[in-house]
Image 1 (cartoon, helix red, strand yellow):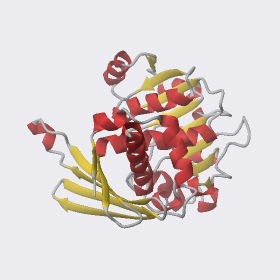
Image 2 (cartoon, rainbow, N blue to C red):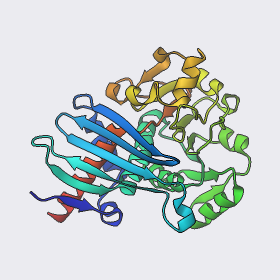
Image 3 (cartoon, rainbow, N blue to C red):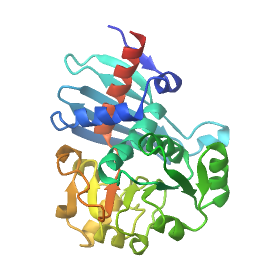
Image 4 (tube, helix red, strand yellow):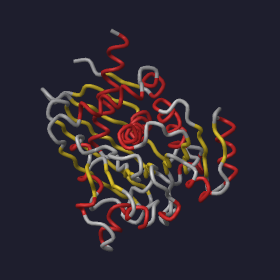
Length: 306
């Protein structure tokens, strides 16, 4: 039995953002995924494993090690791999680079939502956060909004200028409020625990994409953002009860679970219904999207080399 080993560089050559969106749509038409997460700790070091099983697609386990002291020794803080298993016999189909899957899963998740929730005529896109995810978001959003003007805002302004210099077509925003008010799409990928995006800055017709908050104590948008918008998530199972962006306003009574219009398992309702509404999407990630991205990566590579 042949086992594919896909590196970051090899995988990148065969992937396409619109192809990934099509793979997500097909994946969410299959039976609902079973998912499970586990954490192991040794002091500040962490092993995170996320597993998913989709009947008709197979199984995947994404394991990541987080060693905060590694940069002091010239080593990456985060390492990992994704194992993809056959749906029919459970054998190992592939081992895929962790960073490849994370990049395409994260940005692709937000892109898939934006193709359904953002206005097609969106021309001004603001990326909040000048990290690795921000670069992937530029590539992803550019594929669907090729005529858009991109701006980047970062708390440390020098990092925003460094990223803008590295990527053609970027401008730096120095005033976050002004940048949010003038944008059609705001995509936020930060590590903040205190909200950066304020509802009072939003105007009709905008789309807000929230990525960074992944722990129960983290959020990027304040209560007013959720009050004045139609709210969507990628998966109710991996956001409700897990992520502060949703759980904190739920616990305060700011929103109820009924205020979440739809997740990807309800694609008929996962759409913008007027040009004036404000849409908000919470990108929660999760193992089910890891599996879909990994299976797409494997299929695309096999098709390219056959």
